[in-house]
Amino acid sequence: MVVGICVGETSLSEVTFISDKMPKVGEYVTIEYDGKKVLGMIENLIRGNDALNVDINDFKAIQKISRLGVDDNYIRGKVKILGDVNDNLKLPRTPVLPGTEIQLADKDTLNEIFDVKNPIKLGCLVNQGDVDVNVEANPILSRHLAILAMTGAGKSNTVSVLIDQLLGYSVPIFVFDMHGEYVGANFPNGDVNVIKPKINPKYMEFYEIKKLMNIPNNAVIQERHFREAFIHANEKLSEGTEKIIDFLDLMYDYLEDKSGLNDEDGKIDKSVVDVMNKINDAKLKYSKLFYQNAPNIISNIKHSHVNVLDLSQVDEYVATVLVSHILRNSLQRSKDAAHSGNKEELMENSVFFILEEAHILAPKKRDSDSKRWIQRIAREGRKFGLGLCLVSQSPKTVDHDALSQMNNMIILRLVEPEDQRHVQSASESLSQDLVNQLPSLNVGEAIVLGLMSKVPTLVKIDEFKGRLHGEDMDIVSHFADIKQKEEKEIERQEQESMEMGYNY
Image 1 (cartoon, rainbow, N blue to C red):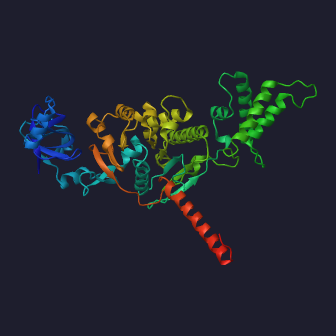
Image 2 (image 1 turned 90 degrees about the vertical axis):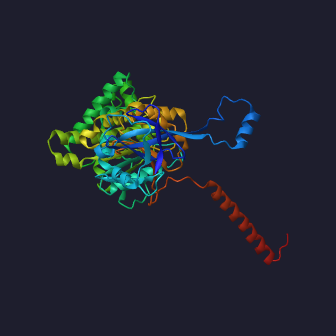
Image 3 (image 1 turned 90 degrees about the horizontal axis):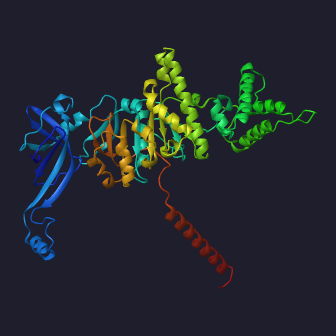
């Protein structure tokens, strides 16, 4: 089917065409010339009329012309050149000859484009529902992914479809679940392993636990006392005892002996007592976080499972500490395996981390421990089998450095211009014409681009077949049901009163 004819000056990257029928933005086309079959995507369309141009300012004249039904309508479009179908989608070295016909890409050609070695089925083409969109799994796992959308655009459904497809390859997935959406989820291809946000202080680094104790960097005396207690506690635990001793209690006892509180001369070191008080305060504040019998969190990761760390009951500060702790330990474990030369152990330590609410964990305008470790995993993770997926409904507030390391993107509907600009600046393959399509995407529709896909694609994401708890609440129906129950109860009470002989 002929879509249009190339006109004007053409280039190696784009072609302008004129058509007598209306194609659709996002449709794939082919252009055959010089022995090549070049694939392209329609990225822009304009409909106009020479007789009704913007230079006419007379309303009555415009009204008269429109009533006459002039046939000067035209359709002009722009095609982005994607590559030669017969040469592994390499860009052509010569431009299209003006006057060349542009054909709608046939189903066989498109099926060949989306035929990949390790397929992850995301959905189907928005404009051709009979063509499945498969992306390659390995670039997602090793070169990272961002899933970005405004609220209500289908982000949670997209994440769930991706998780379920990855479970088909037995990939260990670790979700930092900020709202408890995945705790009770059901995935057709695998089970959920819920991990409680419990951390044993003995597995924490000095700077991690110091931050939770609220010891500022400029409090050098307090930091010195705290470091001594930290080293003492680690030494005691390494000696081994029959009785399990709480790490923080070991620190507190050491500082109590040092403080002079129990000395007869009454000389008390106030700076030591201040640190003791901070340890007590932290034990109360983080009573649900610290657990002396807890194993290292990453030892709880199960293969072929969705490992969900439930962060719905902790505040953002604790969440950032947990994220940095887990990412740091995971990267160190993988580095140790790599340096030992044990490739099998390195592969066993591979994890795909999904970070919901990435704008909280890797914020644009402030520093945090979680942000630093997200950046490190983004830069170094691919060498050690660690993948990242940043998920956010507020892309403009996600750290640019972290976002720019995401070599794959699934972008659902985005309306805010600042969101659009921030995403475009972080992606080399997101053209302005594609950005212009973001506000017009329907729920569940997305632009997919990056190393996981041979070509930029407009996708209708599949509906997740399992169970999830991220849907919007039906508040109106809930309170309507309450009112209906109250009215029925009043009717019942009135009926009982009448049967007993009472009249109102």
